[in-house]
Image (tube, rainbow, N blue to C red):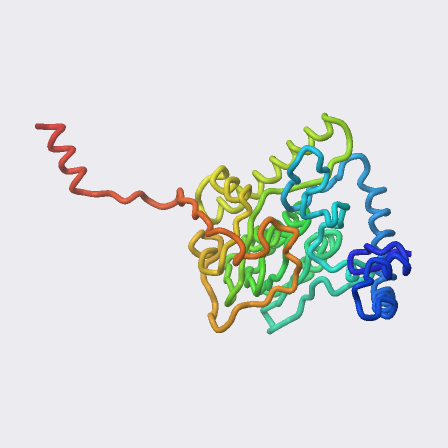
Length: 323
């Protein structure tokens, strides 16, 4: 039975053979097998069930970067040692069914509800169906949404975004550490968005998996472009600029520090600056593993507000016109 952090060992002998450099490969493999064997079995069953439901197309366009290279059906970051690898920011051992700790909702005061999303968005984390069902039970006048998420399924993300936008309560979003991918546009549902000390935000184009012929691939490409345009419109609606401006930043996979997110218009303010927030996700699935590894973002020019007017220039022009 497969086991290992990435389910990479076919059996115990395979593990020992591939780890001869360790002091006691048998003991090391026995420990790894005990810790990960069950998780691999559940991941395999979950994926088999999901594939059977997905059908010919990879169904939901997940939020990420498309692969590069004509011979690649999966992005380079979705492969390890040249073999397909489940592309997720969550350790494989944690990909199991039956978990109910993806997020939590608690009452901070009589009229304030605290909501925490500290996980992926979608099948392996916070699903829109579960989240919106619980969200509708909140009767408080103010929702304080805390985010620490690497993103996930873009359709679930948009459903969560709309669920928050449509709720009658005032929504205050606090990015505690990371609002990447789908998490970045869920954050835009807030009436106020606060970047906590040392937090980061990341935006990028949608990606998806397609199985089929050329027509199927073309249909998936069209779907991804439409979905990316929809998400770019969310950023433009809040921060200004055009959909094209934001798509350019999304294609480049743009990371923002807390201050840069405020400068870009994706957040309103930065909270205390005592220390940097710690990330608990595997960000190697993205083009850049966090803001520290990414180039400085380009801030789109806002299309909102009035243009600067020089009264002197207007006066001189009128004098010239009537001279």
